[in-house]
Image (cartoon, rainbow, N blue to C red):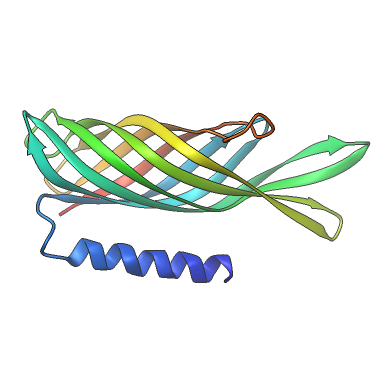
Length: 179
């Protein structure tokens, strides 16, 4: 299945979860930009859906799903050949814990889970796709300037899983819609 098909399937699945009345709490839909650092600098558009499920001792626990697709690439040299490197399709699923700072929804959060980011390497007409996938952890915050709208900034580390694969550091800034 191609990347667009995967993206559509996951979006439909997230939409079904978002509209389910079985899950209690508030939800946040966000869209923005991921700045991906490894040895190179790459960029991707990202969309997320985060839903609080339960509050316990002042902390909101929930789940989050994330989809991204690369829009900015970089170049490197290998054996005197220039190689174009692009972020491609990425996704993640996380457990979240958020500490509310205001009643509007401003909070600080941590997230732990699994993430996968595909990286395409192109030399002339040949493209090789590599994946960085594994345990992911991060922290960030949502700053709500109205009851429904705000911004989000966060940092995430995707561990490469083995000694041959570098970790990815992902810094993100997004617009947030809360419902």
